[in-house]
Image 1 (spheres, one colour):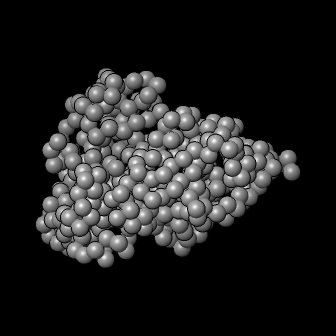
Image 2: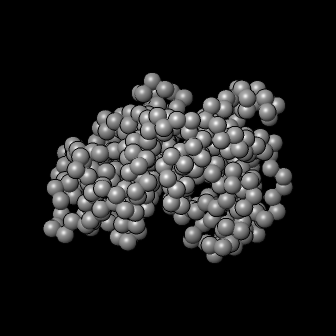
Image 3: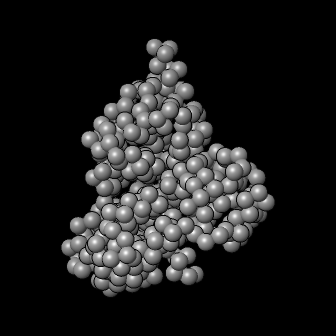
Amino acid sequence: MTQDQMAIEEMQAIDEEIRWQAVQTRDAKFNGIFVYAVRSTGIYCKPSCASRKPSRERVAFFPSCEGAEAAGFRACRRCQPQNVSARAPQTEMVIRACRLIEESNDESISLAKLGAEIGVSPHHLQRTFKSITGVTPRQYAAAHRLEQFKTHIRKGGGVTDAMYDAGYGSSSRLYEKAPEQLGMTPRTYARGGRGMKINYTIADSPLGKLLVATTKRGICAVTLGDSEAEMEASLAVEYPNADIRRDTNGASEAIEQLLSYLGGDERRLDLPLDLQATAFQLSVWEELRRIPYGSTRSYSEVAESLGQPKAIRAVARACATNPVALVTPCHRVVKADGSLSGYRWGVERKANLLAREQAIKESH
């Protein structure tokens, strides 16, 4: 894999919502950055393709045509994604900035230094970088360092070597952010979560399978899906050595409350949570829990209520990364025109949830 391809793939890993928005608006500046495939048709396209827009839950993203074809998709005859002309100048600029950040291996690299290297003003670089990746250069650098650390650990490296190889200047810089970014200390992460105890229960619900996982401090995950195996695998993917056990003694109290909520008997879920996140994510999730039952808010309204009216995309990312479905009602956040946007557990489930809440609200 070339350096450009590595930069592109890491850019995409940061914010899937940005890619979906590019498909929705047919944004040509993302041509050459990724392709999207539609599971129902078996076809993949470039972002600017003029074909009928697919539903979000049927779309998969790939960093290249080769990746899409390896997964069994065939190229769209209309947009011919293999025949992409040179990438837009702003895209090339962002990829170059990503490469400089990665090569610097220095957590103190400044926006001014990046701008000087590329030959653009810091303000222009910051604005363009965020419009394409969804994050600032500083946030990208932090995400890249953390991913380098995790990759080194997964290969069996020690914490100290991984820390310096990833560009952390001191252990304090790594440990001060570790709980919110890793969900545990670096040494616990290096042990694959060894010592953590997570119990989970899966039950049938009106929305498919419902999984609830808890630690000794509270609920750490509530997920919706169709496959128990996939839900169990996603729970274990970050912590392969954690003590994760299925509760075989029937539905837990949390499961019972969630099923009562879906049935309309509960209007408010007040359950203990054990969530690891940034301060901004926590503030967004707390604001979502203030949205009244049967009501909705737009992303911009949530951003304004937080006193950060320009943080609309950041609010969308926080909604997309919400680990506890229903308890934190991210399904109540919609577009400004009232239409439904993406939902981590499928837009159809989001529509179902909102319809249920509205019907129950009106019946009372």
